[in-house]
Structure formats: C-alpha cells, structure tokens
Amino acid sequence: MLRLPDGWRPAHYAKTLIVVKMMSRHVAIMGATGAVGTEFLRILEQRDFQMDSLKLLASSRSKGKALKFRGEELIVEELCDESFEGVDLVLASAGGKFSKQYAQTIVDAGAVMVDNTSAFRMDPDTPLVVPEVNPQEIANHNGIIANPNCSTIIMNVPVWPLHKVNPIKRIVVSTYQAASGAGAAAMAELEAGAKAFLNGEDFTPVALPHPAAFNVFNHNSAVGDNGYNEEEMKMVLETRKIFAAPDIMVAATCVRVPVMRAHSESINLQFTNPITEDQVREILASAPGIKIVDDRENSYFPMPLDASDKDDILVGRIRSDISQPDGCGVELFVSGDQIRKGAALNAVQIAELL
Ligand code: A2P
Image (cartoon, rainbow, N blue to C red):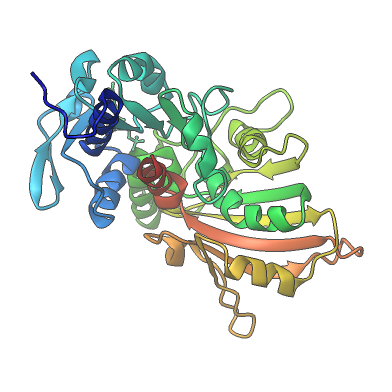
C-alpha cells in the first residue's frame, strides 16, 4: 500500500503526480522533414528544450530517413493513428489537412498540439497566440493552440507594443514574402529556377504558380470574391483575434518575391492620438522580439538576408506619415525570418510557456 509522507493528504499526492506528468515530456514533430519541421529540430536543440523523447513523423516517402538531433540520428516514422500514444506535445506542420485529420487522436491521447497550419486558427475555442502579444490565451486551450500565419506574426510583434500605448485604428500593409512560406519544395524551386534563368534554360514551376526567380507575383493563395487573397484575409482576421480588437481595420497586399526565407513588410499605421517618431522608437526599443535597424545616414534598414536565421524581427524606416497631417500616422518597414519567428520559433515559444 502507498505510504504518504507525514502530513500529506491524498490531494498533495495527486498534485505531485500531475507535476511529474508535466515534467516528463514526450514530443512529436508532425511534418518533421519539411521547411518548418527541420527548423523545429534546430530550435529545440538551440534552446535546449527539456524533453524525454522526440518522435519525427512525416509521409511514407520519408520513412526510415535519418535526421540529426543533439548529435544523434533520429529515424523518421510514417504518420499514422498510433503515432501519438505516450506523446505529450505535438508540433504540427504537415499541412492543414493532416492537423484536422489527427487533431482528435492527438487530444484523445492526452497530448497538446501546437498547430502551425491554418486549420484551427479562427476556431473560437482555439487560442491563437503570439507569445509577445497574448501569452495569457495559452491557459484557455482545449488541447490545441494555433500558431498564427507567418506574415501576421511578423507584423504583430512590432505593431502590438505601439497599439497598447496608442490604439491603432487602421493598418495598411504590403508584404514581400519569401519562398519558404510555400515550403521546402518552393525554396528548392527558387534555387533551380534562378539557375535555369541564368543559363537561359526553360523552367516550369510546380510548387509555385509562377517562376519565382527574378519575378514578383500575387501570393499563391486563392483570391476570394472581395478580390483579396487568403493570405491577405488571414492578416486581417488573425490580427483582430490576437489583439482582441474586432474593430481594428486592416488592408493587406501579399506578394511573393525571390527571397529564400525571410518576409518583409511595409506597414502604414493610423493611431487614435498623435504619436511622434521618437515615441515609436522608444516604445519599440524596449519591446520584446524586436531589433531596431534604422540608419538613415548609411541607408541601412531591415533586409531579409539580415533577418534570416535570426529570432528578432528587424524594424526600421520609422517615420511619420506625411499623408496624415494630424500626426496620427507612422510608417515602418520590417523583416523577419518566416521559418523561425514566423513559424517554428513562435510555436516552440508557445510550447515553453505551456
Ligand atoms: P515528406 O517530406 O515525407 O513529404 P513543407 O511545408 O516544407 O512542404 O513540408 C511538409 C511536411 O509535411 C513534410 O515533412 C512532409 O513529409 C509532410 N507531409 C506531407 N504529406 C504527408 C503525409 N501524407 N503524411 C505525413 N506527412 C506528410
């Protein structure tokens, strides 16, 4: 028979069991071989994420493939219904179809899914979290926490601290989005397309709808009846949910550019009250997840090559909007690593807060 320490009541014992269960962490990455999946491995390693085991899941095509983690080779398993037995945390980035298909199995297994896809983002029962903005929402999860769209995260990190001080009425944003947002195949296609272009060879894109190299085109998501593509509407609707600001007006133009892995955005803000450039700089200088890169003299501002492989969102071109003479307008230019803060890093930060 179990003998409790002196003075302990069964409630103490139950709490201890819960703590022990929380401390033993078995993690699975769904989509481990993809652009975001492989970044999960790097980030878990770099941040020394505490866990007891790590399972790598992908399609039958990758079954048996070895991926390096903490000096060891982990073998990729084929995703199936039994994949989640004994798992506590699932980092999902295999695509919305698979997140939807396996969500119930994951929750039934007692695990929490931090989902990188758009499958549950607008579900009212699923928290949609940027840790720098609304970490408190994590506590309201029912087994699933949604990681926002990459362009939305990269915009929200610098805009939120300003909005907290002086509520923003309207955001007009134009994106310059990297190939990485369309996955590992699109990144390979950008490289192959660039080589073919320079060699004067024909090239037929498959992962993206148009040649990515030496080109700029409308984001590769469906265009809706209102003329906005899905990526643009994600930036509108997700920002409202994350900021808990249903009235904030957002208009986005989302475009792919021939960049490998960091998104840039031109952001125009209209505040409720006048705000100066210096006030914006001061607020952003102490905000988390941001690095100010704003050197007018040397024309050195955020660039995707500088933002690549970095955790911080680079923010610059900070200036008062001359088209808003009431002093309520500000313009920014930002660059952030789409695979890190736009996806894998944000998800791991959520998992750390769990
Ligand atoms: P695989 O490499 O075996 O195809 P990306 O976003 O970079 O395109 O990556 C997508 C991820 O989703 C990859 O890890 C990919 O695995 C995985 N995936 C694609 N189809 C399936 C599937 N049918 N079952 C499980 N994982 C899948």
